[in-house]
Length: 113
Image (cartoon, rainbow, N blue to C red; front, side):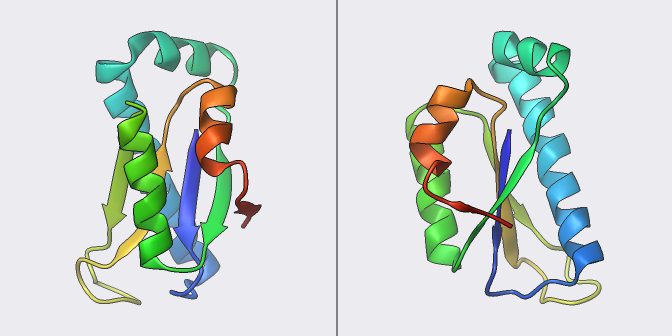
């Protein structure tokens, strides 16, 4: 599983951790329904999660679209707006769980957060 976070929001560490958590949980639940085989393998192998970064919302949208085109479970996370950022702000996208070779085709050029 990969979670891609927007750098331009300059989220505080705790806020970013919460958003990444939302993406992880949402993606795992979606994968359990849509890609059960991938989900079970990911669960058995330790539930690896990698956090990457993009510069803008547009970049995040590209990642999301590519994942959808490959039929990989993907979830865009929108913040409730109760603390640092306005309601509905897209903070990150969760992709997977999926086989590493498929994820790498979409996110392999992105940098670690």
